[in-house]
Image 1 (spheres, rainbow, N blue to C red):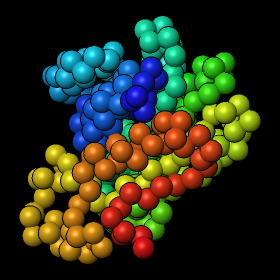
Image 2: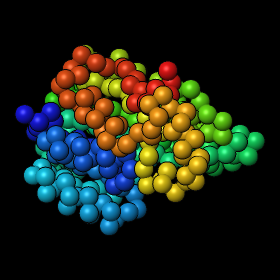
Image 3: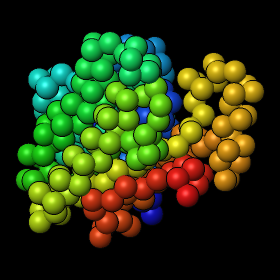
Length: 248
């Protein structure tokens, strides 16, 4: 028996990196997957084909989770197309790093909008369906930076810390309806984005991690499978650090 058999998941920012890893592992575990993407149409099409080949139903939606109305429309379309929304993974996110003295108001606002407001938008969009079903698992992607802060990332850290507070509040509000809300806080995860960085810098980061390696999208996806599945039926309001021991 696959852990997510028959469940429908929405994964935002699903066409690459961690989101793509989550979409693939969810599909392998039997979930039907609706994923969103912003610009990469070809990558989204390729992923949709790859997921459908696993024998589940998958569909990519070009949708901006940071836009309240687009989030509402997406949730409505997914219910129409898939019949339910059992799992929501709020993964879409961006960085615009700079020291506080150099960061522009625009770069602060944009990161809060894409990383934090999108979580509000999407959670509100799926809430009615999950309340009707009297079940659901919401998984919000924070970061090790949201837990401990990081110089040069005031905007990103604020958005990711905000996600933790938001998720705990949702857990308290919706727990009586069997809707769970948890957070995954990834550490240093090696994706297409980190592959462009200087190898010596990356190796330095690896050396500083107790497990001596960067994480993979699968490491994050496996934690999400646990939180999405009935194996974690009595877990809500929690933050799971998946960081190789960085916060130890």
